[in-house]
Length: 90
Image 1 (cartoon, rainbow, N blue to C red):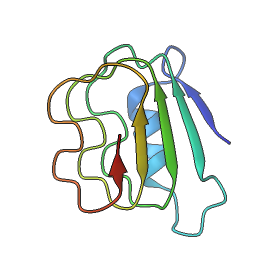
Image 2 (image 1 turned 45 degrees about the vertical axis):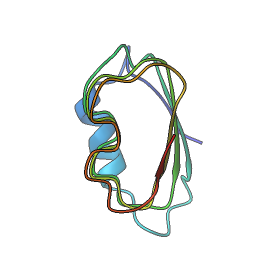
Image 3 (image 1 turned 120 degrees about the vertical axis):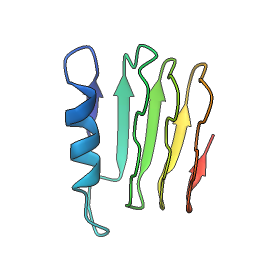
Image 4 (image 1 turned 60 degrees about the horizontal axis):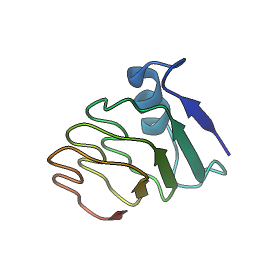
């Protein structure tokens, strides 16, 4: 279960890691800590995974999502789940 702390890892590196996931990945449960209101967290994910974001997110979290379930445990800016193709945003 990957745990990514955005206080220590860049948002670009997080999104790149999520984009590289293959449909048959074993890394299906992701946790993101300290999002700090960043914009565009977990965008364009195209894998059947679950992502839990623990804290507030800015604009467009989970945008252009395909297949993933993204849960935000905190407040969210506008455009959450914008242009989702499939999956679930809660």
